[in-house]
Image (cartoon, rainbow, N blue to C red; front, side):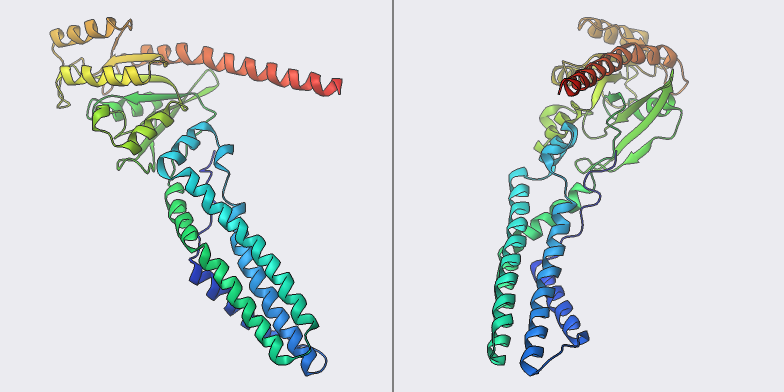
Length: 359
């Protein structure tokens, strides 16, 4: 899936739109060769100006509406991210104002084009065109703040991470330097792609691996699941909620060697917070760097993890030790979810097919 806001166009300011429309109108009028007497020529030229201004403005505004997806039609993951980055009510209000402007300009165009067509006074014809220019300029200026807001929103929303929502996704969590990136590379056998993430300065690392003709997606979100909830701002909290629509399994990494710079007590505290936040998810807990960790520290962490009803795994992501067993655990948890989801999809499609037959 691509970024749903990838095709959202640059939104011009009110002054830029007005200037663009008026320049196009003058260019069209200069290239136009009207027929008839002086009055007929004046009517044709001024009507052309009115039509051109209207078309340029409405086409520019319609492009915004047509290339901006409805937030409520997006998958829940992206809906949460949009709510994280922009005010949805204000976003909808801005789009509604653009739609209002399109309709209002069309009405003004029809009204003034008709008045110009039936006017017999050259001075009145020119005056009507100027009145139209003033009215449409006023309409565009009325939505000027909304246009600026939409362009600001567009610049942010185009940076949403591109995630394959159809793939079962495993989310890696744990303090910085515990080996998350190393594990991601080892697990996926590929250099992870780094996608832009507007609410963390470090990006989002994405990798995939294939097993028995099924592809799995693994992501690490630096800046989100690597420090206590109390230290996160509201945007990051909302982004964490978005991950709940994406993940299937959480892999939490401990570093019992404490070479990451965080003592075991802090790592346990972070685990508690993430475990409580994602309680509905199955957890796989791994102890990384066991080849250099003190056995007593390892057993201390294992005892803590088992108290949560989870059997921890020992690995060395750097050496590739214990990864096969961890991958089997991941697949063992995720595959039944995929099969159940596929079963529900088939049942839903069969039900729909039977209903169509009955009709």
